Structures are given as structure tokens and as C-alpha cells.
Length: 477
Ligand code: GLU
Image 1 (tube, protein in one colour):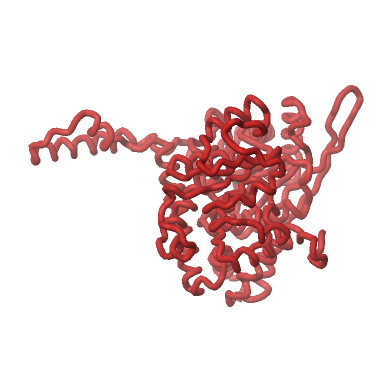
Image 2: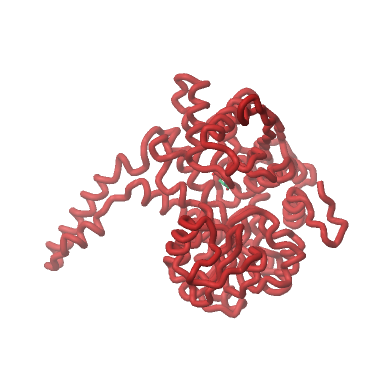
């Protein structure tokens, strides 16, 4: 692990998460042993397996699955494919999953997995082989199952990998009727759920909207309330960044900066997201996009002056080395761990409001929870009640017509009477969860006269909920 001694060294990711944890833990009154139990990683499984690379060539693949906390089961968290994956990173992200689930009141412990590969260097067939082998290793060691540990997509993985996981698990468990609940983020045709793909980015949007709706907080930042007209810089145009940018844009936010690995785009008048995405898809890069200035070094683009900076890529993007140069009022952490604790200290002193990852990017796991419930109940949300609600609403409207003498148009009746389908219910459940969790975090923040960060406030709430479940078990006095 890296140390924090040198001025230029960034502490290890798990060290940063622990530091955030203890900053909050010391403001609670729970016994030290209980706090240590919460902070520690319960199970760390490191494994290797060979894969064929070509004629007679083999490569040894390294993989991890970490179950951070079993205070609630199953444990939950994605798995990533990236060539810089290592034990410390997976442990940190597993811990973040524990705190994240508690912040949004999702009844899971935290887990995370990682395979040390750059997915771009492998064919689809090789990725399928690796994913299926990864899954069978997890099955062998009891690190996967609907009531044990439930993976999901993360950086470098998507619905496609999740369908391979589910299929492999089902092959090993013939007749297990709940088997599809062993993984979430699956394609719709493979027991997935409407809205899962968009969920993390959509959650980031709800988080920004909630934060920006509080007049007093916006006033303190010198901003007017609401999202309309605010400027944003989004780092990462993958699943999370793209959807966060899309929903912010649709609600009137000006996207003045968009950043990817090859560099960033800057246009103070705002950019058309779909046009940029289309350009990058066709050219493979943001470079030379005609509607904006290209910034060669992606980290320089983080320094664009804006109202909301939305890092949606990897951890440790904002550190004590660049925090001073960041010129935003709000940071909405779509990624896990994009801001180090030292950077947060610098930014907080400058008055920047940081909407912390353990709240801000929880939308993915929230909708994963809905998918898991759908798989266990074996019925699509809305299937039983949609038509009933629709006809009851229509009758009500007709009764209003009769008593008021006003006739509604067919269009209005269709709109108002409409019963909710799965997508509506998922979106409404996600929105409600994000609103409630923001209010809870804000309440704790206010209780401390806003002298602590929102991250510390979210951690305190999270720790309190986890501690309660241990205390109710009678494990701690
Ligand atoms: N990988 C996502 C996260 O970091 C989603 C996890 C899940 O849905 O289980 O929150």
C-alpha cells in the first residue's frame, strides 16, 4: 500500500475510505470495537486462472472479490475489468458499497470484484470465457448467490457480462428458481429491469437537483436555486457520465466541458451531448470536434470554471495536487472515490460543496435492488395493477366530468388515467430514494451546523444504521 508520508503521494484508496470513515465514526458514540468491525473488510478472495491467448499461448488472469460487510445479506457490488485493478482498490470499493447501501437504506452488505484486464485487448469470445471462468471460481468458493453475494456492472463491464454470469450460475444450479437473482444489471430479456442502465447517471441527476433546490445552500455558494442555466463539466462519457450529462442537459444545465481519456472539450456556450457522442463514436476520439475547443490533457479540463463538476470516471481524479486549481462550486461524485480526503480539505476551505459518492452514485445499486426483488418475486413491477389503476382513474375522471360539466379531451384522459408500468415505478422508486437520502444527509449536516462535510454527514448516518443492525443482533453491548 502507498503511504501518505511524501508530499506528492496519494494515499491508498482503502486508506482514504477509512479516513473518511473515522472522521465520521469519531462523531458517533458507538463502541470502538464495533466501529472497527464495520470498517474492516470481512472476506478478501484473490484468485488467478489461466486463459488461452492464441495458439499455445496462455495468460494468467488475476481477479478479486471482496465482501466488506455481512451485517446484511446478500452482499452487493459490481465487478470491473481494468488493467490497474488491485486488492486495495477492490477493498476500498467494497467498503464504499457497504456505506452506500446504508445511506440509501438498501438492505445489502457491500462487496466488489475486479479482474485485472483491459477489456479492449480481448475479443468478445475471450471476454465471455474469462467472465464465465470468473463466475465459476466465485461459485466454487461460495462468493456468489441470490442470498450470498450479488455482482453487477461496474467500470469495463455491462449487461452483456452480467448475462454470462447469470447463465453460468444457472448452469451450475439446475432447477434453482431464484438463480437469476444471483447478479443484477442483466439485459431486459434475461431477467433485467427497465431503467437499470440509466440508473446511476439518473441518480446523479436527482442528487444534483436536490442539492441545487435548497435555496440557502445555493445562496452560500453565490448561486441561484434550481438546475436551469447552471454550467457543468462532466468527466467520463461512459454509462454513468453519459446518463448524468443527459439528464442534467434535459433539465436545462449547460454542458460547457466534456472530458474523456483522450482529452476534454470546452465551449462556454454549452454543447449538444448527442452530437458530441455521435462524433466520438464515429471518430473514436473527441479530438477536432468542430463545436468546441479541444484540451489535450484531460486533467487540465477538470479545471474549467463551472457551477457543477461531475467526475464519472475513476478514483483519485481530484487530489491535493490539483484541488487548488479546481474552479467549481459543486462537485457531484458520479464515480467512486474521485476526490481524496486531502483534496476535500482544500476544496471545503474554498467553500466547494461536495455531494459525496456514497450518496451521489447510489442510483445503480438502488435499481439493482429493484431488479433483485423482481427476480425473487418472479413478476414484473406493475404487471398486476397497471390496468386496474388505469380504469379506476378513468372512471374518476368521468365522474368529475359529470359533476363539473367540463369535458376532458381523450389526450388528457389518457395522460392522467395512465397506470404505471415497470419503467415508471422504477424511476419513481429511485427518485424517492434519492430525495429521502439527501434529506437525511442534509439533516445530519445541519445538525452539525454544516461544519462537517456532506460526506461526513452521510457516513455518520450510514455508520448509525449499520451499528444498529449489529446492536440489534446483540453482538455488541
Ligand atoms: N457498480 C455500481 C456501484 O458502484 C453498482 C453496484 C450494484 O448495482 O450492485 O455502485
